[in-house]
Length: 309
Ligand SMILES: O=P(O)(O)OC[C@H]1O[C@](O)(CO)[C@@H](O)[C@H]1O
Image (tube, rainbow, N blue to C red; front, top):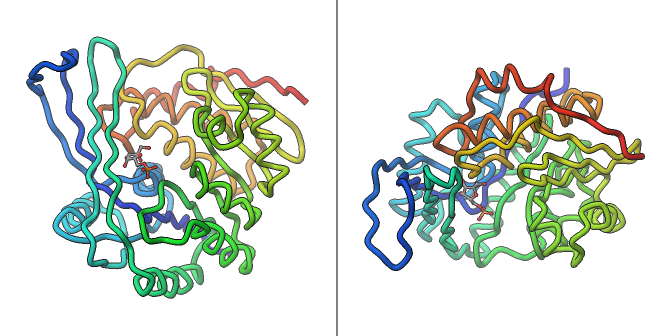
């Protein structure tokens, strides 16, 4: 039986710090009402969501210094399984400032460590060994300095050589290089898609990504849901209402649902229904990688799906 494990790769692991306050006073002193910290980086959030849904998932990536240790310790304490390569550089922190009044958040993302060529080679050896028991690979997030710009192409090709479907969630040069590995699915958000393809029209942007190598593209449009452009058709999935809260990690929740769809070969309309519902249920919770179970149970039936082609 093929492996059911979804392997998530987080090359730029983070300790995600979340500040909660009513409203930010720009250029003033802001007293934070509540602080929380947990391991993050896009792949980690994807695995956290998958594990909460009861799926087999393994986190891999690079971790260094006291921040990397704190993130790794939190992963373990959360019950996630991780095989991270230790590196000399210090892993980064990110800060998400959630403003209750606006029902939205602002993120500050540190650049992260510089990775040496020897560390990258060691990671490739670890990754190759993990592919032996992997059903789907998720490559997501920014690349730390020192890594080759085509790092996702290399990782994607190693997976494809073993007939393992690849889901890529990146932006800019990391995404463009990664397309050369012909990923099964690419999931940019609207801004990443526009910045990478040079067009504001998400349909045209998705078409360009497919022309450059992606088999399918699912672009998240924030509160307007998701569009999927695939070899068998194009769909738009819209949530019933705008959900206020912390949108950090909503895209990662969509990736988790889409990865499950890839693993099981679920029909596209159902994949999109699950992805939009899980994304919205994530916005309702204070931290990335967590979702409101009651909302997730209720929303899929309320997501509107229209087939465009
Ligand atoms: O890897 P990046 O693209 O820099 O994004 C990292 C950040 O994005 C998030 O995963 C949210 O999507 C945060 O948890 C934070 O770690």
